[in-house]
Length: 396
Image 1 (cartoon, rainbow, N blue to C red):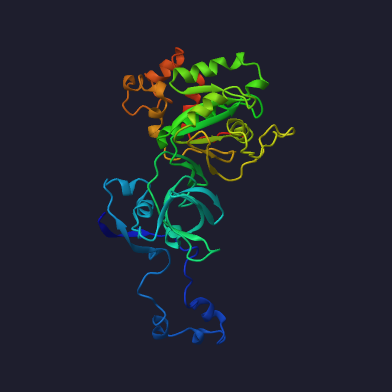
Image 2 (image 1 turned 120 degrees about the horizontal axis):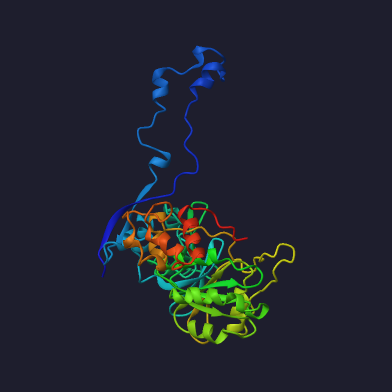
């Protein structure tokens, strides 16, 4: 049995700061007692309204009981508060273990390991933790929950276990977990409408490597285009070590996708309108996921899948269908560490003149020389520059 200990965790800040108990200026200039200095309270009266203990955002902490981690760094994986959420002690005799398969607003649908699905709310303490993410619970999370005591009531999620493979993105200066506890991510891009954006593919590759997920590039809608102009893209990413598959909802590449999804958990992600739901309908007939055509006016995808969902496949394994994205900002990959996520840069980095070379403006830079001589593709280098300079990518 794991040892338990008490830890101090930070909670979210109060939405507004505490106002003063007395507005001395307003009272002095003309309050209920009339204008003039005689209306202001005396020193003794004002002192009675002072508080010794801090209020507001200075006192948003709480002591909770947690289980000691076998790995000392485990509690720090997602920050102190998120570590507390994953290590929080629960009574296993009254709780069940399961996986979050859907999130609808405040209600999470949890599939128990022993079978059955349960609608659950998140314990108030977990929702109050000060974390860098938008939500403490994401689809794919392994959780401990307490079933409802009465029919018609919702259960309560007591603990979120540490996450494995994660796909993150930044959204309004906060972390948005696209997929949690996944083994593989299918980066779906369209060769027709919406047009192919290799910069977005590169961002997904960095996000996958940062989160410890195996990426597979899927170039969809192969039946709508001449494939000859796209062969160099397949060759480029294949030489870099990324599996690249040409697919079509009419049948091309479907057998390979079905084989990839037969074990583990696979996330399907990409821009809106690239055909993610259509591919899943072709992989497992009978899913009947909603699909929509690309807008004729804007040539942009329409949001069909509005919430992530974890689906059990008949052939084995799980697939996570995620909503299409219109924006993708990297999270957890500082500019100084980007060079390590571009695999073709790695042989040249030790040859740069400066050990802290950013490969953007320095002289005698081996990476830039490799770009000049065609050993590194110019488009990939431009993706690196855009990410390093934190320039936004127009996904739409």
